[in-house]
Length: 261
Image (spheres, one colour):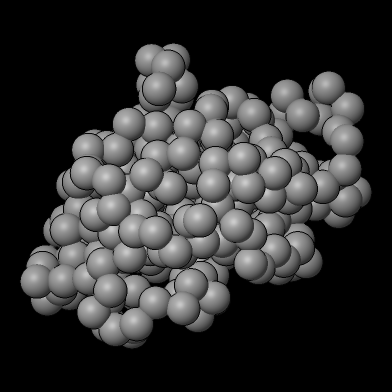
């Protein structure tokens, strides 16, 4: 992955940044789809208890720990940001899940695993940060067993944005580009993944983000005192970009699950 993008991710998702996002989203999660998204991916995957799942872009470990504790799967999580990996490992240990969950630093486009290592591969709201989404899905297909599930949730472009809007969204999201739901389906099919489930979950993302903005406004005094009023203003502006794009229908979310042919 490009050094500039990795640096942007490390800045946005450093220890403080991730802690702030977690406060706005939900405990242990840096993804809008949250625990419900995890549960839906597991259900749609058709995997059984004891299956080995790879979680790409595991963040603070929320999806991996839920897959293990609530669904009885073994999980390996990978994330590009070293501070997230450290925090996720600490939380796995605190949760008593070290026998079921392993967290590693790794790149979605160059996974350090042999072909057919996993029974399923998931990614929650993380592939938006990957420049070459095709390469990431090709890697996911490589490391999963034949007929194994590959499932994702992600931010998607739901209608053509103006160049100004797209630039603002990508900057706020620390993303190099955005895929559409149809684009993800086509990319998965082109890499030998037969799409079985494809759902538009834009209403879930948009509704959740209205709550995010309410929580952020309530944190004004805390953020201004801890950092500065300017930091709070920047956070309002960047998060407001998402809320506006959701409201106008140009930004949304998708849940897609397929199986390696």
